[in-house]
Length: 218
Image (cartoon, rainbow, N blue to C red; front, side):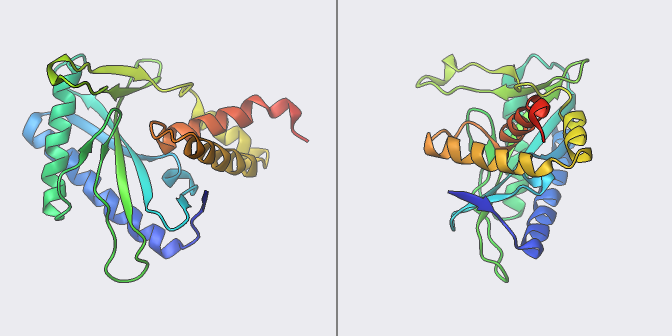
């Protein structure tokens, strides 16, 4: 089952390395394909909610937000260019190619030679926003025949106003409820063997659950 990671030095080193990789990622997207993108550490990593399942590897979730490209509707090309650029960066760090899953690009396991040997990986979701700041994830369900594969934008559940809701919860001293909810949600999906809910989706769900229950706060 999941529990919170308490080694602050290790967490800082991990965030620093992953941030450097993501900076290079955005750079290569711009230089090679003229796609403008920014990245955000999201979910657990951005909110000091990083969890670990016993001694198993940790994952950090990033959003690669596409802010400029030739055609936002050409999801297949965006996904392909992102995968190519990410692999180019990972090769510089001798990390091999990423795994191309339904909703993210995932690195192989990484670990530090010195210090805490815990393995970790990066899950990168490709996202964009509409004019009302609703967040959409690029989804690519796999089929046996790749020429039949579909690529599309899917709205992240109840993503609008999450920062405002989180601030509301913190100001009222109820952040511990989010931490409890987040851990419960992660463990629920673990028990269900559900691997299609990255941490930032779990975070959105936790914040919404706590915010929607605010009338019952004591």
